[in-house]
Figure (cartoon, rainbow over the protein chains, first blue to last red):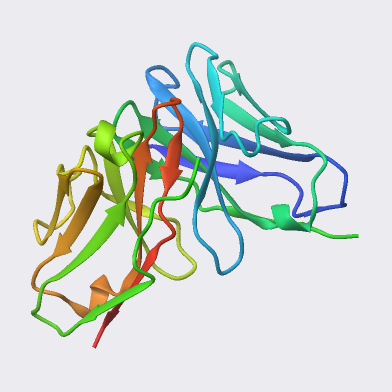
Length: 117
Length: 110
């Protein structure tokens, strides 16, 4: 069974860089889009971006200047970096496995990241 | 990219059917058959219920169905059950090779 698990600091100071990792178990990295999605408290889902197994990335235009998603196939992990964070970046961050053209069949449990001094 | 438009809330009684709409543009919903629907219970991660407009992943009840007409996609839940009470989100592939979500719809089972 495919499982994803987010990890990283739960508290980040304003203007700093948010860094999260997602460890994938029970399945191959190949052939999928590895995706980050976030959800501010009490609000809806926002697609952040994805990376394909070739390393090709695509980002939400509204976040593109601050986002980097990378993939470490040797560790079965992919990562998110979001720079210059503000309180508006406070959210539950989910990592997912997205099947091409379909959707995210597998999700991590989500991790709350709070931006505060 | 702008969020897809969903009604903020819908409600129905057990056994009834409800439909949730998801309106986009010709650059997302209307232009591709890559529309998916997610169910989210409080405090839980979303669950994929429909993909490619009308396909159900293994294990999803056939009470859930999807369709699309023009720039609007729809999720229909028939035979409403108490466990269907949740938030529902649509998502679509876009012309700039990204994905966009709807604002979400809260379903209340009366």
